[in-house]
Image (cartoon, rainbow, N blue to C red; front, side, top):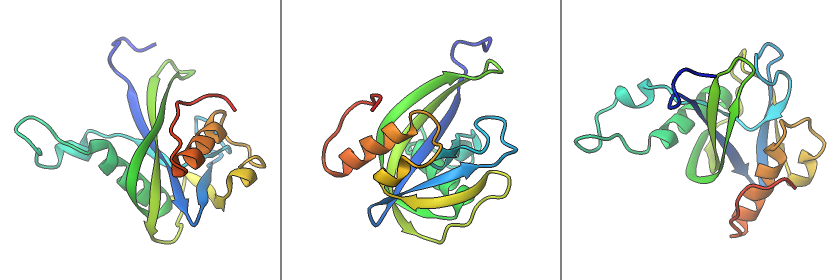
Length: 162
């Protein structure tokens, strides 16, 4: 485990919604974590996501996660998103001892054609919740899709195994 009890890798993901379907991507075979499995797109927060920008107040940068998520979705799958809303969060200590915190969001598709980032993802599909059952999703992702489906219907809840 990490030396510091405060040092976490922070990642953010988006359940991107387009015409009632959700975007999932298959991770590259070369990925160290969860190779070849289906996930929703996203990525890690980098300090440059905010330190390269002027502060919004004297002391703080605001909307850091939202800006990071927009950057990651554009880089990873070539899409623009809006209306980012929180769905849930999860934490894990990886095999190498690195702790990570992942913030899962839902977002609306705005524009762009799916263009996969080489070395990150190998496939992408727009699927319904029912179709999601046919994919080898990382454990917990299907449950997040259920939450997203409910969120779109105005039903908000905390994550639970379906």
